Length: 452
Image 1 (cartoon, rainbow, N blue to C red):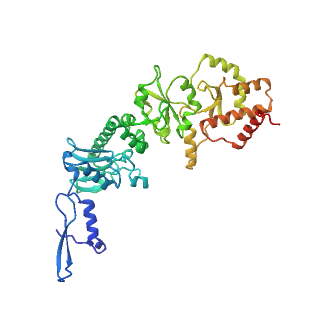
Image 2: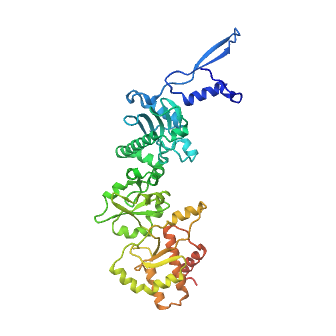
Image 3: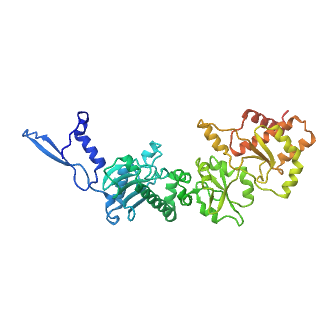
């Protein structure tokens, strides 16, 4: 067969161009692809024909697993991933039945160089049909949340004589996708169970990507949730545990998984929102990854236990609180009138040591996410929150007594605003007027130290 090229396609006669094309699309074709070229002998001046085999023909995924060494797997992984490290796990199998294909997949230990340099949201597996490379741009071959997986898929039943656009719509690809996803999630589950330290290293790198599947892969949400790890009030800093472990160790009668969103563990473990749960001996899960607040609500519940944010919604009620509320009723109305941006003022059952905290509605955005979105230039609607006061705290008792003694005391308004500012500081959010807050603290220090 002779191929005639147009004049503007002469680049395809260049040896380097032919080599690169054969290397990309036909490197693993069973038969040799030979390029003939002529070169002049330096001594005789005669032209000689040179034959170069351009393809390796070594499709490692077609060989039996028992015949492949760890070194060969590692070498092939580095070749296709541009990673300098060995993979954390190798998945090599043949799928038979309604759809037949061979897959050789690799789960990295660390982010490969190309993933650190680019923010490509797509998954890229090399798709072959009977050893002929088709593309690595098929978005429906693997979901985006598994884009850290590298490897090849070689299908036997896909047509070669159609365009890539038509092939993209082939229903066989959906069957391959479901098979691949199932095998990858199972492998990760086995790694977590049998090689926890190795899994933890992987999870620190790729956990945020894995969580994306909660809002995109509804079919596998439970399996993804089983793979997630979080720091909690029961773990040391940097240590994590699974949601299954949390549920298994829940106190008798506890029906909810308590969570708290925070920028980092230091803010989380010192949050006033934990005080009531610590007193009750309940463990709280920390959502420290920025993506947590966006994707975890998609899960809704885990093993029949709903998620409850420690800093949102009602914390509970009691007869004692009802009596305190009657005592503080006028004062609570006064505080509400004095403060802007506060939806409601009420007494708290969640506070044991802190004087005040700011609480959002059940489905409101956390202050941490609000601040992050503002830094990104995203519009954030103004959200009014509830100011909760600890009726047993000396500061709250003193301010309430000041109100009862003299409602026109000029220090009363400043004290109320200071309570609101202290609630902002405790949760790690920005104070609206830092200068005024600093002045109030300085005045209090001066009075306490007896300054004239």
